[in-house]
Length: 380
Image (cartoon, rainbow, N blue to C red):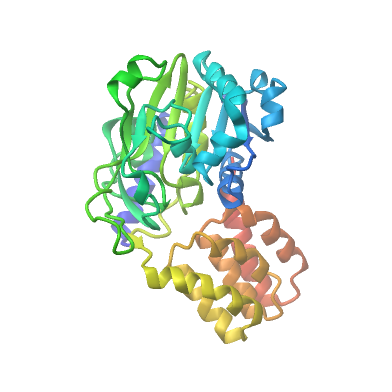
C-alpha cells in the first residue's frame, strides 16, 4: 500500500471526525434471526460486527420469539446469510406476516446474502417480497466467492462519507444473489418501494464453465428501499466478514432505524487487502483440503496453510483460525494471531484474548498482544 494511499485515509478520518455531531448516539435494539436458514458463520460474524458499537444492544431471536411478540421491543432485525428459502420455511407465513407488519410500522431490516434472497420478490421462489428486487438467473446462483471490487453510488457516499473519495472497495462476496428490479406490477400491490442502489458490483464472478460471464458487473451490491414506514437495507455481500469494513454493519443498522443523523464514531482502518481476489475452482478445492493439514500436518505444513489463507479470502477456513491459537508450536500460534488481526476476524476475539492470557512463549505472547490490541481498537 502506498504512503499516498495511507495519507489519504488519514486525511479523510480527520476531516470526518471534525465534522461529527457530539450528540450521543441512542441505544439501538437489534434482533439477529437464529433459525434454520441462518448459517453459523454468517450469523456470528454479523452479530460480532453489530457489537462493534456499544450503543447497539443485539440479541438472538427465534421464530418462537417472533410469535411471542419480540418485535415489539426491537428497532431493527437482521436476516443473515445461510439459506434463503429455509428462512422462509422456518419462519412460516405467520411470522413473515409479523415481520412485514414490523417493517410497515417503521421497523428496520438488514438482510444479508441469503437474507437478500429471502426478502426478494422472485417468482416461483419461497421469499417474503419486501426489498423491491428479484433474483436474476436463480438457477445459477452459486457463482463463487472472493474479495469483489465494489463502487459506491452517490447515495452510498452519503451513507459512508469516509469512503466518498475511494473509487473501488474490496468486500467479501459468497454466492450472493444477482438482483434486478422487481416487476412493477408486483410492487404496485406491495408496501415495498423500488430499491435505490447504494453500491454496485464491478467484479465479474463466474467460477465454473456453467456460469455465463458478464452477469455480475453493474448489479447492486448494496441496495435500500422502504417497506411502508420501515427501511430495508439489502447486502448481497459480506462487509461483516471483510477486513476494514465490518464497521459498515453498525452504520447500516442506524440507517435502518432512521437514526443516521446521530453522532457516529469513525471506525475505519486502511484496507487489509486492496486488490480483487476471486477464488478459482482450484482454490476452493485447496481450501477444503487444508482442514486435514491443520489437524494432522507438521508445523511447516500448517505455516504454509495459514500463509495460503492470508493470500486467499476464504469463507469456511477462517473459522478454523481460533483453533490454531492453541497449537503446540508457538510459530503456528503466532501466524494464527497475525491472520486473525490482519483479517479482523471479530468472532475470534475471545479466543485471541484467552490464548494471549495463557501464552508462555515470550515471542508468541508479544505478537499475540499486538493482535489483541488491534482487534480491541475496533470497538467503540
